[in-house]
Length: 569
Ligand code: DON
Image 1 (cartoon, protein in one colour):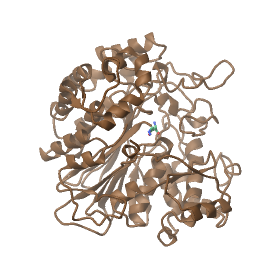
Image 2 (cartoon, protein in one colour; image 1 turned 30 degrees about the horizontal axis):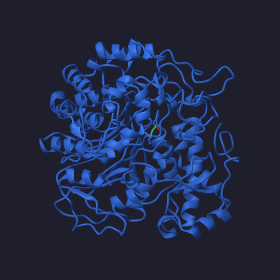
Image 3 (cartoon, helix red, strand yellow; image 1 turned 180 degrees about the horizontal axis):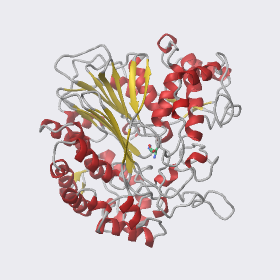
Image 4 (cartoon, helix red, strand yellow; image 1 turned 135 degrees about the vertical axis):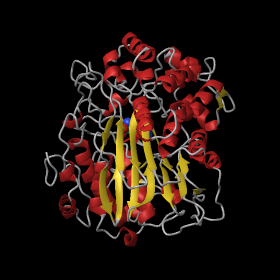
């Protein structure tokens, strides 16, 4: 769906027009005084900020925002999907909650292949077979119980009210819903909620979600059991059974959140904490930063041919490993130590020809040194200095585009993140390997990368993005734009991006990312450059000032929120 950062900014309360010296293209980042929430939807941002103002901590606010986005941003906010939460406490401790979806117990490696062994188009994307066991409610509930300070009723009340009384749709809300209208029409319970008496919603209409409000009330009373045991799980299972899906009551009863240590690495004195497997995000981000660390990117210049060349080669190598080696840690041995070894980064650097593009045909799993839409991110910092980064998702916009009757819950299509057939690209063009084949109760490989950055033990940044396979390079570029190029956090979020993911062997560039002569220089080196519409939804909070080293007293933090999608309407 589409963002409206201006509205999101207004919901933050303080506009700092006078303080920031933004570049020509970007508005100044928004400032927060005692803490800050940054999300893609103004109503969710406001709910989170209210929780902070009422004395809640960053986890309370993050849980409240998670439930609110499920109501006001149904394209990606969810109860029927899953995600990750990276937490850094004010005292320096860190933790990571994996509440991503799991394959149903009845899932099999070949479940999306036809008799001839070919992948059935869209089978993993639309309808109940595409649905993996949701984790969001278990994740939000565990986070609140373990690390929050408020009651479930307190943090869930705003989401319940928005679902029950409804909220006014703005242009972006309506446009997002209408993108999926044709699929909603095929699923009567979805149509009853997300179409307006069979017709598309328009700006100014009120979206009421009575069934969802009831489900939220039940969760507020009973916690995760209200979702995973009893009538809600039963309704989801019944709808799944009736429509060719594989979900069972045992899938719901057995779902459990995993708490893990974040992946960590350092870059030019900054320490990053990001998502471990089953996400590839932290590993790939850190592998790229390890490769890039010694290079003077700042001197080479923002998006110069030389900078892009070295960054693209880092991306190419990191995505080989990401696509082939990483998977659910309960099922495979993830070679994290090897991939994040500084010596390994040096070996990759040695393979980069200063004058010539690498070639994805020549590198891949087994060649030395390698061994054999829609999502949403939000960031929270509270006045004590606790930081929470959450990325959660239904996978594509509105997930599998099915809603079990009587629940109001849109279900994910995250089964498509599995390697449905090793070597065949998924919706994001990712060519993944055996580490990510489907197995019962396995979690599919993810690119989601909720990330916290510190320096000298102090919190510096909290960031993440949507964008499928590109999430990792979006987070990389947003971080580097702040750290190496001195951009404000909003400029870094706005800066035009490029992306390479090993296969296809192309540099994708956003409009205006590179000049004609930079493109020509890259092509002379052997690159294929393809321009595409803007991608991603980055959301970042920078501590202390609008840009590094520009501290502003009286304000704790500054936010940059992505406007790319709104700009297309
Ligand atoms: O976990 C993942 O990597 C994907 N399910 C993320 C999907 C996504 O970001 C779609 N949004 N653009």
